[in-house]
Image 1 (tube, rainbow, N blue to C red):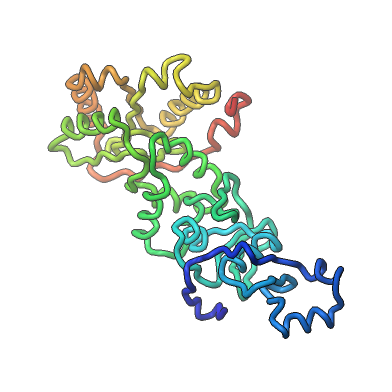
Image 2 (spheres, helix red, strand yellow; image 1 turned 90 degrees about the horizontal axis):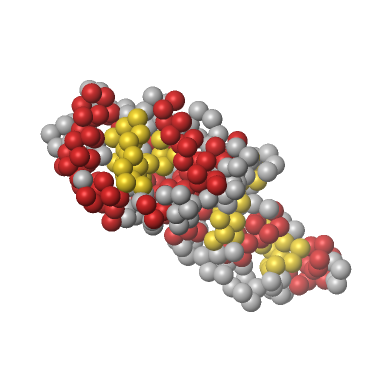
Length: 316
């Protein structure tokens, strides 16, 4: 594989019939001369230094060798490709607990984040860490984030991935700003329509599922430094479905943090959206009118770790 050319290879395919064996393992059953003969005869194939396969190595075999025998965690364009099941581009992008380095097969960064994933049996970083490590156009990275962070209640997962970043947190926040993530519930869709209609004529934007500081909010209006949370009685009332001590603690400190960032968080219930939409619309508009700035406001980064890292009950 010519690393300098970084050629595109066929899409990764895992050959379950192939077996990876280290030199030390092979030398328990053969001599070095016998090993050389086996390689020359095509019975063994060198994959990476010190690792051989019993069949002709394909891209997935090489990735597996780097993963299993080098302890690499894949990131950047390689993690993105594994998520999307697209061709492998060499050299691969990876992370390791040791110092960063470059080899013929891999560009290795120092530091491994938490909140890792398994894809095709290989360990990869979160989609968010992957994009900040990838040298790709922003539009491509944002499209990838939109596809990876979809589904209801995706905000909690996104919050944890932001907190776990090894580097480039500011870059991550810039990529997330304005990138549609999550799948809005019917309640959130209704709230979005109410707010957008109420703000008609004002030069502001209404964004959904955006990170402000450490936490994800249902609706965000950057020009007014205003976030909106829509609380369902089923999920948010005391003893509601999915309510835990940790989520209760996080909810309290989420409000504390956004106030410290000089933002305002408005909260409405599902009953407000369903039965009093006019009240909600007027309330949002009066806050936006007095807080609106002529120029857009960037979504602020976190100033400290999220509460579940610092609070004894944060993960209970």
